[in-house]
Amino acid sequence: MTIHIKRVITAFIAIPFLFGIIYFAPAWVFTILILFVGIVSLNEFYALIRLKGAEKIVFFNYFLTALLFFSIICKGPFYTAIFPFFVIFPLAFFIFSYPKSHPKIVDIGKLIMGPFYICLPLAFLAIIAMPPRGQMWVFFILAVIFAGDTGSFYFGKLFGKHKLTQISPGKTWEGTVGGLITNLACAGFFGYFFFPSLSVITIMVLGIAIGTSGQVGDLAESMLKRMSNIKDSGKILPGHGGILDRIDSLLFAIPVLYIYLSYQQM
Image (cartoon, rainbow, N blue to C red):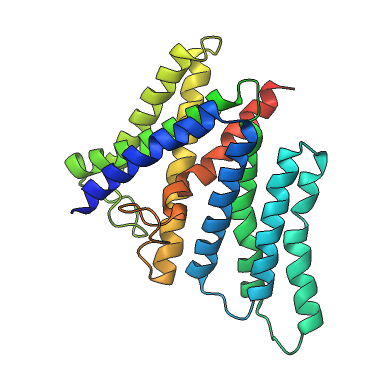
């Protein structure tokens, strides 16, 4: 079975499941799903950067991640206060274990980077999903990002000639432009049918901003994998690799939508 067929089969299973959770289940169920995605992705990230001797801090970061999303479920205002502890605890740990552990600044930075790279955007997504119209915005960003990923792949395969960057040799300018076209087409579809009150300019700007940030997110994870000499972050999704491989674009795009929705509510 080819990788392409595996990707299609995985998508046909995952998409209806995800649709059902978002549309039919209570918001807290979707938040639990995001928590699962966050912990698995964080685990893949720490495996990617190959940290050693920091298992206690990594475990505590998993605990803080769970606490973060449960605080969002409870709709308490203190979820933002959890993020400083992703910095405080690693520093405190190394203070009391020094000089036995001899930590390197770069290793401390990697420990702290994981939650802010993965958990913070996913927390924003959980907040975006809250009623009354949160589910439609979640569908919007997922559809725009996944449409862009698909468009980039096929436009690159069919028309790709000019390499985009050495970080990911398979990426081309043609694929990038094709991805942005599908981003815009998908955003326009949602704008016409589900957000008729939004202007065409607003939808176009959102589509381009989300699409561009998503492509940067994809390249960012490609850079991390290239630096670690690893092809995929995991094997949990046949044909796609790890969960981090699947949400890398989404992680950079979520804050863009969150900023827009926060501005809209001001």
